[in-house]
Length: 333
Image 1 (cartoon, rainbow, N blue to C red):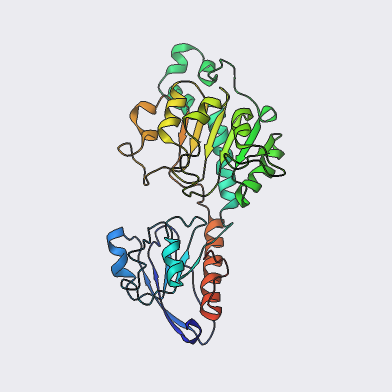
Image 2 (spheres, rainbow, N blue to C red):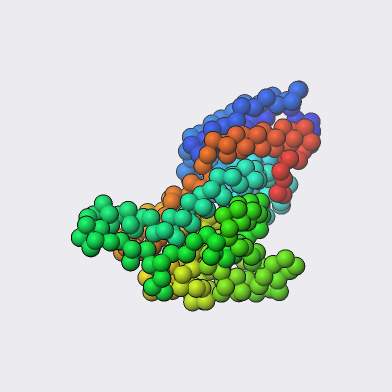
C-alpha cells in the first residue's frame, strides 16, 4: 500500500519546459529526485524504470511504458500542464496509477495570448509589418487594402464582434469575461451534433453567426477535426479563428484552404497537429502561407512567470497529497 511507503523516487522528465518545484514532503516521507532537462520517447522507459512518481509535461507515456513489466514501482504521474492527452489514462486506471494535473494555472496568460492573436489577425499586423519593411507602403502609397477582409470591408472593431467560445472551462470563462470588457458580445457553443444545453447556442449556430471563434477545449477522439471544411464554409467572410487548444482539433489543411480562398478573414494559432512544428511538417508554416493573414506562435500561450508559480504550487500539492493520502489534489484518474 502506498500509505506504508515513506521513501519515494521521483523522476522529472522535462524540466526544460518548467523548472522542477522545490519539494519538502511531509514527515516522515523523504524522496530522491532524478531530473532530466529533455527526454526523447525512446529514453522514457529506461529513465522511469524504478520511479515511484513521474513528473512530465508533454512526453508521451504510452501503455507500453506504463506496464507493470516496464515500470513495476510506478504509482503516480504528475502532469505539469492542464492537458493530459499525452498520458494513456486507460493504462493508468488498469494498474491503479494515480494521475494528477495542474489545472487553471495558465488561465491569465492564455487569455492574454488570445487577445494578442485576436488583435494581430483583426488588424492584419503580421502582413502589414512584413509589407511595410519590404517597402510596399512607399511603393503603393497605402496599406489600407491589405487590412480589408475578403468581403472588401475594413476591419471590424471590438464593439462589432460576436465571439463564439468553443470550450467553456476555466480559460473559456476568463476569455468570456475579458472580451466583454472590450465591448464584445459572446455566445458559448454547445457540443457539435448535440442539442444545446441551457445558456449555450448550438455549435452550428456559433460557427455560422459569430465573427470570432475561439477554440479552447481539450483534445479527445471526439474533438479531432472538430472544425474542418464544412465549418469554414459556414463562417462569415470577416470571421476569425483563434486556436489555443490542442493541435488536431482544427483541420490544418482546411484552415489554409479557407484562408487562401477568402472564406474567412484570418486565423491565429498557438498549437499544431505535430509539434514542434516546422515548415516540413506543418501546412500552416509552409512557404506559400506567408501571404495569408495567419498568425502562428510556437505553443507558448501558457508561458509566463505567474504560470510557473502556479504549476509549482499545484505539482507540490499533488505529490504531497499523494504520498500522505494516496490521491492527488488535482486528480484526473
